[in-house]
Image 1 (cartoon, one colour):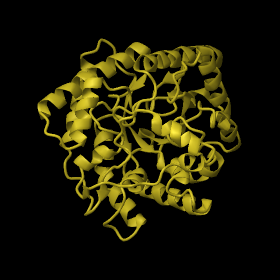
Image 2 (cartoon, rainbow, N blue to C red):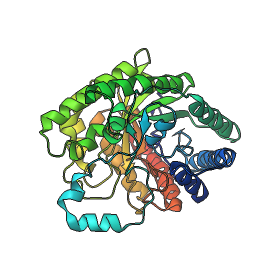
Image 3 (cartoon, rainbow, N blue to C red):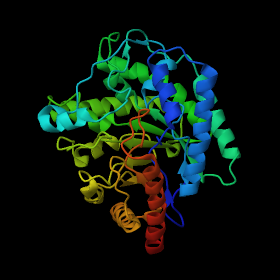
Image 4 (cartoon, rainbow, N blue to C red):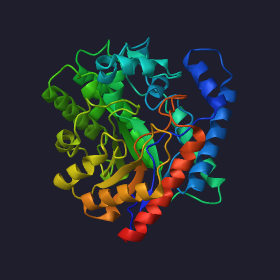
Length: 384
């Protein structure tokens, strides 16, 4: 992975706003409606070109395709793997259970999301169709070639086996551990293809934090941390033979605007995350619940050589961060890590993790990314 040798590099956590026409087509496809596959593919290709152009215009150094062709950051695997059908009914986040008035507000918001009832495992899970990934990678390469500028580096997202196991419930495997292992073996196909294509692999693992207040909300902390160890070990087996320096791990407490008072502290997680065979951690550090945790990184240093993609832009609010605020957050992260070369400026999470689910107005997403770059330039002048 590129380090911030002369200035703070900018990146983001993966998903970017999808055009309304593409959202409508993806939602129809997810509902099983008959669609012209060529029409959907063309809409996705146009969206990828637009996402690439907008990132470059905003000054993003390490970019991707904005996850435009995918219906969400993890449910898309149902079209590439065997064994999924029906619908899951996963437990809500603890905030919704404990605060009824907040739940009423949240449920009153008009949202189109595929994350509420994803499919479940009803048979053996295997990776059976690499063609969609191959098309996406080729389309992204063409989109880059059409631009006058290029990213300094590119990344590509794929889910953790743990988030798929927690959200896409299991009717087939005898234990959660067996299900996670089967998913890890299947996802290894995608992980290797991404790295072979020349991209940094980002493993999206909100399960390693969010499931503490979801699937494990009523269970002891030790049981949740055992799940984290189980999932990290499965990820490591899936990454066998890959250079850890080509992999970054995105850990998140849930990309929603809520109280988050049940979030597991970073201090509890870091010892478990340190066992991952990766080279960088993508971490939410801008939102009001976790902005203080740069202090944790100062007390509990990241493993030697790991980079920190520090979240300095909140992805759940339409406030556009002032560049000075962004710079201050970057400087705090650099101080905590002890070396600005090991820090990249990032967003807390994605802006459209499930098609149509974005909470930030599209125009403001680009304003936020411009503020990210402006803040990184201010911080670079002070840190280098």
